[in-house]
Length: 471
Image 1 (cartoon, rainbow, N blue to C red):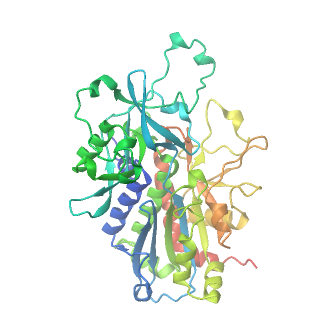
Image 2 (cartoon, rainbow, N blue to C red; image 1 turned 90 degrees about the vertical axis):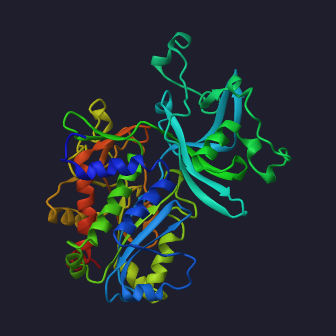
Image 3 (cartoon, helix red, strand yellow; image 1 turned 120 degrees about the vertical axis):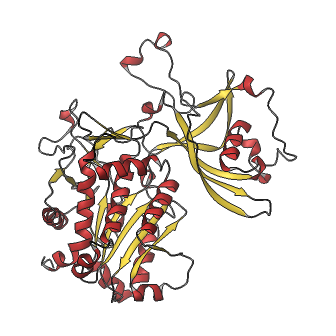
């Protein structure tokens, strides 16, 4: 990259390139947190009391795909308020099915299920590979979950030539079950290959060798340096091997997969790490008035958040319960708390300006967007808008507004789900184009704007909230 102007955006590019799945995003976020001095806790521990009493910085994960990190001020008292930035780690993609082995017309195919509301035509004719987690056993019979990321093009979903579909430019339509099947290789290339031996291949209880092409299992085994028979199961997704990069004539754009919502996740992690850095710690500690700062990065937002690691799970209620271990203390804590639900926003599209309400047209690199919807698809109200404006004002940033047109449906976020807990909530984002495409476009300067908002929130929310009289 030729420019050093967008250092935060460059760091984000490195993060997203290393994070093709929620599992990788959580792993890379954990590495960043540990470098900043965060200590890993386990949900299985019966008591966090000693850790919480002495204060400090902590994080924990669930199912390798969701992460919560929090900083406890010195002199912490149960029932203190919490300041939460909530994001999600998942993005629309293709998931390899539990039984993926298919073939057609001489091709090895890999059966996949669509995950989330993707712009699926953008996945055609891309150089794809696979990533995720694999359950393996060693020679002693011990099981472990290993992350895998194949760094070379392995899979492709080819379009039909225009000569065989003359109307393709009038409207590209395809059947997601029969015409959206990735190809892995050619059948005739496996004729002389050594077969995978399995004495009980007809019994699905003994392994997965009969469910997938031997070539796929061979690639995984080689990458993990294990024997094929030691692969017990996996959760794998497809991803685009073309790396994210800064682009545009002045590198003002981020061309990237998974901007929605790894950009929010990255910026939340950066902000809480910066809040405990040597140059910022004393100022943040003195100004947050006993408030606990939290980032919560959930899985499964793109499919409704209803899972053990999603925003509607027990993750936030259980953390709040540990911080305030009685009904009265919990009620007091929730009343003093605030949640910023951070998800990406729609930037004004130069080719489709009529798709935007005339006074709500966010522009890339124009600052953080406050998202509002009267039907509560976003959880923003006037109090939340006021607080966000004041926090951004302190850092010298800009604020933009977004509401959807009355004749169009509105998306949603984790904000409304978590507001049910009684948390005051505001929905924000930064503007982007091509949301849910395999390749999305964001603004390079907006990475800094996002981090600045979250940093101001962790530093100054508690005192700002005290100045706001709301019954």
